[in-house]
Image 1 (cartoon, one colour):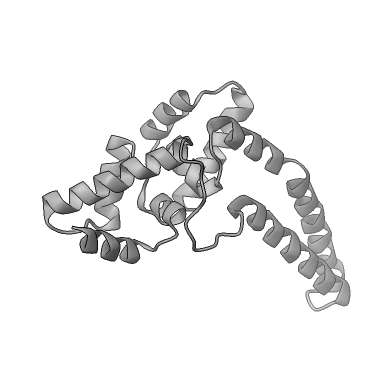
Image 2 (image 1 turned 180 degrees about the vertical axis):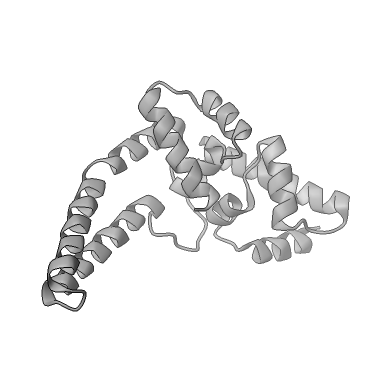
Length: 185
């Protein structure tokens, strides 16, 4: 399980226990448990603020998860009773694949490689701008572009976006970002 999935899972659990959990409380919890900060999750989930994130996570928990579980149960029974190559098993397998793809399409908002259009006054855009400026300054200071590991460690301490979030918001890969910054400086 990657850090994003672990962070989302932990956040869902925290929200079930504490519906009024604040962004600041989450950030403290996330830092202590090596999870993504709220701002990094914003970028991955393509939301603009804490309330949108909470709403999106609550919405996702309900119907689709239940449908996937029901089909999974039917699939297991079909495999036991009729075998793995039975027509019913194949149909159920295709149905569960479609549901799982739908689940990931709604959770990832079908990632496309282009810069996201966030309002300039949104928290995620402002955090991206600060992260970008710091990444640029860091490159100038170190006289080389940081590795993803070094940047993520630095970003976590200073509450900047990690490299995956920067890639997502900018629509550029880390290597493309390096080329862009190196041309600027």
